[in-house]
Image 1 (cartoon, rainbow, N blue to C red):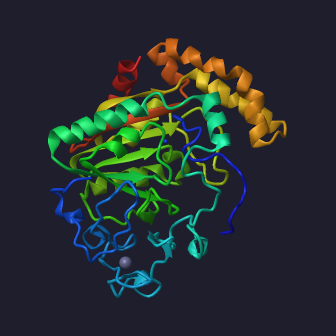
Image 2: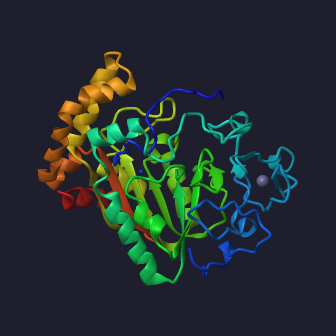
Length: 356
Ligand SMILES: [Zn+2]
């Protein structure tokens, strides 16, 4: 896959949304001998040997060499191995992934230009236009509260964490929460490069999963949510926000949108704590105005400028009624827990009414 060096929408930006203590989880305790690729916000290293597995066959990995290999002699990755990008293991099953091994042959493996900081001028302007995520800041605080109430230290997997998601700051700031960041490219906020369809983690490793503005970018969202279920401990928390009324962004890597009900059904094996819209028709309209400009041939930057006079339209969302707001939401979110009970089809009728 060639690198598309073009300025495009950043995953976390204009998200729908707009996107560590000693642990009692021995699986991620540091041994000092493992490949500790700590990001700046994760001062304690991760015991990769105990945590990681082959994304294809889930066997153990031999991490003690430049090319990481699967320890199962029957696995194709016992021979082909996994590369590293910016020093981080790239544990992607290339046989099944949309991402190609060649993408990781140099640099950090991003097929697009990235702004990990979210502080670039283009990002700031788009945030002024479409606003920040009105939901995620509260949910990240809530997640920390739940985790803190339940145990002294927790480990949270962030899928799509190359750039810190809009509103996720409380999670990253919590002293008793260790973040394991993954994305399809290496960044200072990740420790492992992974494809959400085949997570390279053993079962029931995590106390929570945070996945923001990612599920529209995966080919098979139910498969990714199954993986989230698998790597979560029983009762583990998940927060997901995903676009509904938003135009295509991230070019070829944009596949799906969800209504509030469709998103709830996606997480049907999870018990709901809360769910709802992320921005309403106003925010969606501001997005659309910018895409009118893009459709007329304006550059991404000029389209943002052209739409800026209409930024105020999104304030209508503050006064929107819950049902109609959800019906025209810019994005939707789900906050819940891994459960033993699966929603029934008929539960969905009740769910829709409950959210009016
Ligand atoms: Zn394997």
